[in-house]
Amino acid sequence: MTLVEGYGHHFTLTNRETGGVNTVKYDELESLLRNWGGDPPYDFVGMFHLFRACVLNLTERSTEADWSEVYEFLEPPERNFLERLVRGFQSRSFPGEDAGPRGG
Image (cartoon, rainbow, N blue to C red; front, side, top):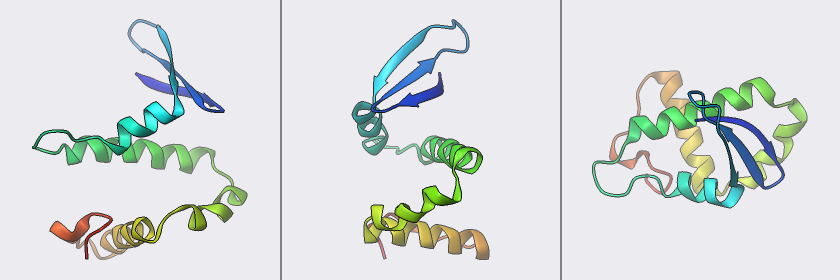
């Protein structure tokens, strides 16, 4: 499925193969992404593909004005995680087990 458009608190998803359309509530989508994982093993690569899709969307669609609220929107552990992620990309050295938002 592909995220097509978001309106308010609903998203329209279109199935590429069938052309079928589904509407998903924002809080349901957020909950699904936030609680991704379930039983081990955790699908880090799968989650990172979803994260990449969000990064691509932000890269293509955001404006400079959109970024003014982001820093205050994120909690300190979340900002810390993103800062460590950026540092990891810059140095090509990523933290081990403490890579989560609550770690290190």
